[in-house]
Length: 165
Image (tube, rainbow, N blue to C red; front, top):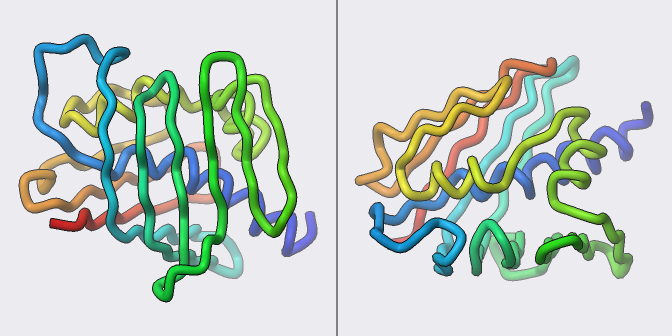
């Protein structure tokens, strides 16, 4: 696998996983009806040989059913935009657009394992929904911080998120 291909794979994984880094208090509204907006900074370290790391600012709008995630540099240049709705997911980066039938399809192709967006949005609300291979640490959501460790499939990946206040 080329270095560029590996980088793209981890960027896509980061896009999918980023949703885990946003926090809001639990609500009585059903999760599928919730829409919100979050922003902050994130960092992903992939413990491969050689180790890879990525950091970006992010804005996340919407819900597990339909939304948009924008990743950008510290000076505001957009790195990638992921938009999803029922039956469709679109990744725009470097002037190119890739379309997928679902966010789960994109995650499966990008990372080699399915990650359900619904579980990630549970993490947003402070619910530690289990996702195979991932270990979320929601203990500092009150301070605007989240960590999630992916142990499987290898290589191990460490996601850190700091929310804007």
